Length: 324
Image (tube, rainbow, N blue to C red; front, side):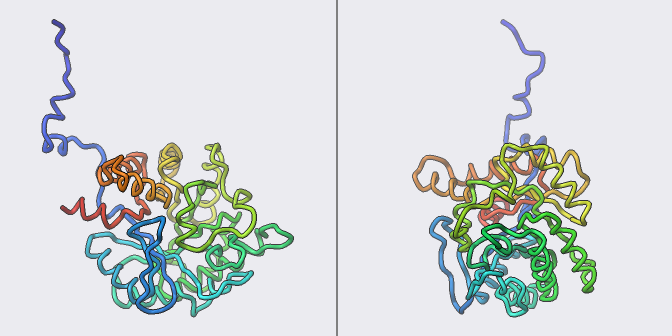
């Protein structure tokens, strides 16, 4: 009978041994929790396609942030749902905007929680696109000024970091310049650097009420078959002043996360997006998968691919499992 010269199973013999030789670790420190804030008081409206996630008024959002921080999660990212939308998304850069109010309330209560803000116009425009529209086309350069104003307004309200997600050419440079000129040179930018035009965003569009009213976003978000283009996009954002670069979505783009990690000496974020979350929840509800196990396997795969931080709607439940 043949006897193997080496037996890898020796190091899989118990949970303790497996922990000792584990190559990739996952911690609440790796998570950024996305939150949706809306006007009103005592509002907590569950998002039907994202069970366990809510549109919340500022008072309830602060309570959610307190629980998030107690679980060891260091950061949240805010998405705003305005009271009124218009063609130019004016609440996005208003000092009285919903995100601006939320930042102040969170930082007053929890100064050590890192508050990141999504910088985009799609939640605030009546047409649902990420920039100014003329003749049915998103205008790149005219949109940059509004994005820069939005980032500055968030920084003025107390945001610790801004995260432009619009995919306009040159937006990182425009935001960096505006922040530097208004006294916020220490505010970091986490750029949605490689953001693909994905079918996994559907539930988010319900959550943020940001579905385009015509067409789609393929003229500014990346084409899913492209890999080399992601490297060009990341390079441009770094040259323009990005401090952290992001790949979005995460699960179908693990190869891109690894490519970015291997090519650049900057922290890498990955967005475990709404559709990825909702598939796990739906499969678990139907009894087809073990939801907790699949959740942790997915999050571990994103870390293993090279992500230093993961934006995920699973953040609180995953942190509870990790903390025991």
